[in-house]
Length: 367
Ligand SMILES: *Cc1c(COP(=O)(O)O)cnc(C)c1O
Image 1 (tube, protein in one colour):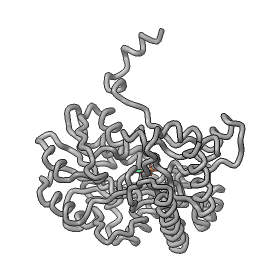
Image 2 (tube, rainbow, N blue to C red):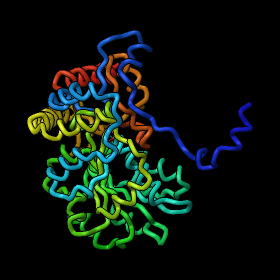
Image 3 (cartoon, rainbow, N blue to C red):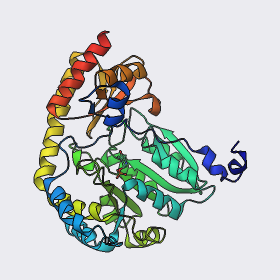
Image 4 (cartoon, rainbow, N blue to C red):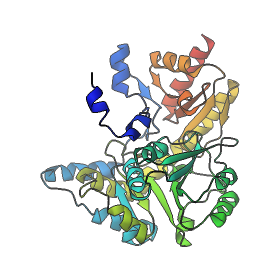
């Protein structure tokens, strides 16, 4: 049964573990027969998309018969203006997930090493395995990327290094001094990818963006996304900022119409909406303070975060709590998939969502 085709699949396929996404609201409501479920599991913006993005999408609906601009010209122009890098420094993808795939397809062949910290975003290793690459995983130290230990793991075969900053699921950043030191010690033919999906939420002054190293002429790619603070996760659009040389290489493996029309036009609107961005940041800071206070009151230890989610230790089996929270109508992410079986990762929501989560968590932990 199925064994004929199984023998035909590339061996790499069997090394893959499927991604575990946050459970969709509709799925939980369907399975449990309840309504009013809230999702604090995928770090989406609780305020929704920018009204400017929505207005542009409505306008663009009339052009659905037309292929999108494969070069994303207007979006790249808007990004170039926003950042002060040239238009040919930008890569646009169907989510930054697609860019991770394209970067890997461009640079990683069988036996090439890809280096990153764990736990972190699981897609780094996933993409490399598809290409027959070898994943070199370095455990976090005090919940942060351990850059000195990562440096020790660099070999002649190292092609890519990922720095997830802030890191998902811990919310931690790498500080300026350690990052500077790491970049100074690293060979220039090793491509460093700074995944800055949560960049816009950072408040710590010690943070350093990969853009600084790009400005210094280093071979880096900075990945950012419209899925998180910009509230466009459902449309799938992310971008990379890099050298025109690297952008040119990655563009060679890109499909001609990889980013759809609605995503391109919504992204331009979202990028221009400073008010929505500021408000989203503010709601996150307030929510963070509230959750810190409540966790402390409940005697729970948490990892201080620079993103829009908190990794918190419940000191009990997270799967049990996860299931009980589902029955309370609250979806979070379990820590076991990250190797922390007593932790959960909870997205910071709107005030009423945070309150509902805390009330539910208290009931569940007391039961
Ligand atoms: C959410 C997330 C992404 C993926 O973003 P998309 O643009 O939606 O594909 C990338 N990296 C990290 C660390 C994330 O948490």
